[in-house]
Image (spheres, each protein chain N blue to C red):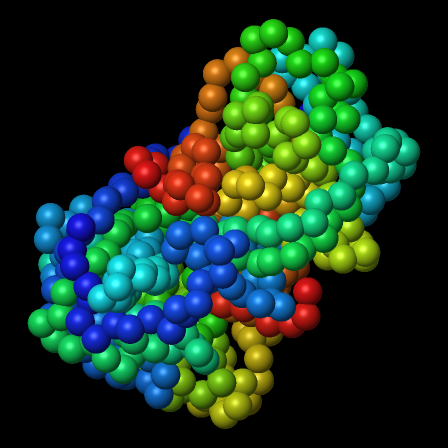
Length: 202
Length: 244
């Protein structure tokens, strides 16, 4: 790597230990990044399906998913465009709860999340199990705004936020990994912010 | 039930790793904008619409990096970036105020395979403020290919002086929607459906780039004018533009 950039001091010296490398604190703001027009989805027409390598492919409606045991996330989120947001609070249901009902088969090792818009993102199954991933419909106690993925988005906060698919409607369990939307367009297959896995090859 | 899949079936866009770039020229065409012309060693040719990452390193190893769209066409021997200086911008402030010709920067690119024009299909380009930058790359590419007939362009800013590449865009026949001053017979005002109606044609892909409020409004206008959501590609930048 090259050395220091002439004249660059950088401002943020007292780095918060919660910031992964190359990230900055966006504060109260929550930038919006999407590749497609924002879809308007009425909750009564939304559903979530878990299919692929599962014993019982299952679909839940908005009302049905709300009757599942609730689960919350309090903590930080990290976007590959280099902002991080601290102390967020999301509420919804754990992905573990959905997978318990659908029953992944022995060969299931990856997940493809698909959104209403056709957006896709791939994840190792291990990254959405063990209390590390949610479907969420509330942010800070209020309905999740549509520009942030409402009515329901995936939340996988330990990975870069493009993995947390907005407007999610389907989780398909796979035996082999397949690249999703950004992953086909140059971004990393796993996206761990602490290892700075931003682009393919990182 | 089949849902449309975004970004499938397209050709894979080129991607490059970290490179050393030497600043060949710097100018400041708008009050808050700086244009950088870079010589990039071992450059990977890009598609119009792709971006580069610029990474700065301080003496103590502290690093900061941000992404910026390219304005240059693939045939340009240099990479041209246009950077809008953000309030409190750690990287944009440095690029706007400190960088001089001869400086060496670490860059990575090209990156991004979605917001790219293929150079052969009709496209409607809609940009706000510095969101015009990737659209300029598409325009220049069309010019190089002799296919400017494929593009329809509408761009928006408060005033002409604040619009990056205003002269180049106007000269190519782009519609300039200025919200704070009239432009020819067009009264001052934000971009409207009426502005876009004459530019919409069947078979177009829409490319919308700008701040989140602009991108939200412009992409909604394209849908209202009959474009299918799957045909509208959006690139947003900057803060959310309002409380979450």
